[in-house]
Each structure stands twice: as structure tokens, then as C-alpha cells.
Length: 295
Length: 308
Image (cartoon, rainbow over all chains, first blue to last red):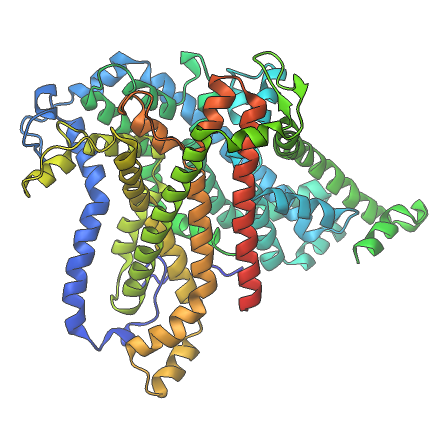
């Protein structure tokens, strides 16, 4: 597995070789920059529009022609979204589900990746190939039996029901396995064994800390994915108090009259955790997404 | 090799296994068993049961009410709603893939070959991909709003009257394609940039020494060597597009002409399985979706193998 190199000096996340290649053809760059800046504007436009709308009073939301910068900015939409529904509760639900699944995914991925990568045992290849082969099956194809299972387990409308599909991420197992095969020095493990450390102690005290950067990338990837989950929570949650923020937003906008002011305020709030992660850890995010492209 | 390990683990007498070996196996057993059990229960068993269930007629109480063989599948062939959904999803996938791969490729080439310090561009173009789909779809619905939407305002500069983009399935599908391209183009760009980075610079240099210009290198070195990555991006985008649901659900609920919503595959599975309690029938649709994804994956493996 190739790792994504990050070229700090040139400011690239997915680094590009030294600048010598760019000396020629300066005249090319100006029109390209113009195109790229227009494109970047279009990429950001929906977010700008979302934020702008969230600060507008109701009369201005439906103003024609629309205004980009709120003429009389107000925070009332942010108050209203908490009045119209238990929005804090939904936010908390999303946070609980996402964090628990994120930690579980990291643990199961690193443990299984470590075992599959380092140990030899009966049926190892068989189990690994089964996981590999089932990894490509889209969730939408097996959600019906999963729903029936949750029904049998009386887990509809429960946190464990929402979380059930997200405890194990097959991609996480491959990723951690590759990481251990590539970077874990087996001599170190043997040395620890000679010193009398048990296998679990080795895993907790040596293997996990040594893979912390890979785990961080996986954690981000898991967080982003679970936070955005929609169709499964839609199936297993029928009670209001277990709704995730995504469900709440989707449900709110199908109500009779769509009030875009509060809805945009809610949307902005729901994006905040992801946006915060993105801004702080953008390089690791690109890295963690780029690694899904490695076979 | 696997057989060798197997026989050593199972066949030989226990005395042949050292304490250390036994401790390792115990660790493997205790560590892996719960993971395999959870995986088996929440993933493998549901996948198997999807196939099994697709051979049954169901009602509200019993999903496996009566075994009917392949009747669900033959019924699919006469189901206009399903056929429309399959067609729409395919159009959606083709539209998304063509636009997002061409744009992603153009961006990745421009940002690696012509623009130094392209980090900020990469960041901005990538941003929509990590954003959760629900709020993103909501704001796009607002942009497409027939009365006060940003797009209608933009079109009014050119004297075009207000449109209800999401109201009719014909235009609504393409409106959602545009949103989807906006969302996934950054992912394609990043994967392609990584692919370009992984091409040894030696090749570029050799070609330049041989007198190939910037475009010659692109044409004869970069693009051909990038083919497996392009294929990967194509397949991943296609699979993702075939699984489309949330954006359509969020953007067209109560905006479309009644009884005339945009039909898509996962939407059909959802409706049949969870609105009309036809779990067996919905499972047969899920199997079709599975077959499409499997075929795409095999296609990719085949091409990558024969290419390298």
C-alpha cells in the first residue's frame, strides 16, 4: 500500500514534486487560475448560501432578488431550531452513536488487522477472504434482513440497533492489516514476549500505540461516515427521542411548510463537527480517503 | 501453504505446540471470535438471507410466508416501476460518472502539472465530499427552489423564467446528478492525484529528454499509466451512484408531482420492503442491485489484471 506523501513546503496536501516543473508556461497559469477560482466559488457556493440563509430573518429568506450578505443579520433561526424540535437531543444522539461506533471500529479494525496481519492460525486465509469478498456488498442490499434481525433482537428504536451495522468496517480491517504488515517490527513483539509480556499486554501497550497515526486516520474516516448515516437510522428509528441529527433535518424539511431559515441553521450546526475535523485534520482526511483508493 | 498451517494447528498432537504457540493461538481465538461473530451476524448472514428471502412471498408479519421460487424475479420483469427505477438509476450513474470523472481528471492534471502550490484548491474541491449528504441535499433543494431559489435567480439574468427543477422526474433526476457531481468530483480528483504522484518521475524525465513536451508526456506517459486508477475511480463512482438514495429522498419528498416521484433502485427496495411490507420482493430487487455492483467490481479486477 502506498502512503500519500505530504509535501509540507509546497503547501500541497497530496504533494506535487518540486517546483522546477512549473517554471515554463507561466502564461498558462492565469487563465487556469481564473477557471479554478470560479470552480472553487461554485464548490463553496452551497455552503455560503446555507450560512447566509441561516442568518436571515424570515422576510429576507424569501426576498427576491436574493441577498448574499444578510441585510439585517439575526440569530433567531438558531434559537428557533431548538424551539421547533429537541435539536440538542438529536445532536447528542448523533454524537453518541458516532463516537461509540468510531471507537468500536478502531478497536475491531486494529485487533482483527493485527491478528490477520501478524499471526498464523488455522483458517486464517479462509476468514480473511470471506471478509474481503463481503466488503464490496453495498449496505442497501442486505439492510432488509438486518432490519428483520434487529426486530427479532428487539433492537428497533434502540441505540444498539442504530449502531449494529457500524461496529465492524471491513475496509478498516484491511487498512490496519496492511499497516501492521508494513510497519510493525516483529522483533519488537518477540522481544516483548521474551520479557514475559502477555499477548494482550503487547497489543495494548505496543501495537496500539505504534499504530496511532493509522488509527487516527481510520477514526476520522469512521466519524465522517457514521455521522452522515441516513438510510439505516431511517429504518430503525421510529421514535422522536432517538432521532439522529440527519434524520431530524430530513424530517423537518418534509413538513408542510419548509422554513428554510431554521432548517439552514440546523444544517449549519450539523456540519460543524465535520467542518471542525476537516479544518484541523484536513491532511489526515485526504490521506484517509486517498487510502481507500489503494488496493 | 494454508493446508500446511491447518494440519500443524489441528492434526499434530498437542505436545508439539509450545506454550508460546498456545498463548498466541489463545490470543487469536479470544480476539477474533467476537469480531467474526459480530461480522457474521450483522453482515454475512444478512447477505445470505437476502438471497433466501428473495425466493419468498411475504406479508406484514412473516417475511418468509410462502416459497415461490423465482416468481419475484419474473414479476420484476413486468414491474414498470422497477424498470423505470433501474433505468433512472443507470442514467443517474452514467451522468454522474461521465461528468465527475472527466472533471476530476481535468482537475487532477491541472493541479499536478500546471499549478504549483495547489493545496488550497484541492482542499476546496474536496470539501463537499466529506460533508454529510442530508444537510447538503437540503441546501441544494433550497438552491433549486422554484420560487426563491438561487438557480432561478441566476437564470433570470438570461431572461429564463422560473423553473421547478425537482418537480418533474425528467428534470429532477439531472438536477440531482449535478448535485452528486459537485459532491464526488473532489474524491475522484484526490484519488487521481495520488495516482499521478505514484507514477515514477523517471518516466516523465525520460520522455522529456526524448523531446516530449508537456502534452506529449501527458498523452503518452501520464494518461496511459493512470489507466488503472481511472478505472478504479470509474467503478467506485458508478457503484456509489447505483446506491443513491438519500439525496433523492431528501430533495424530492413532497416537491415532486404527486405519484410521479423520481424512482430509483434503493428507493424501490425501501418502498416495497418498508412501506408495503413486501420484504421478499424487495429482496429480489436488492439482489439485482448486488449483481450490478458485483459485475462492476469484477470488471474492474479483470481490467486491472490484464493491464498490468
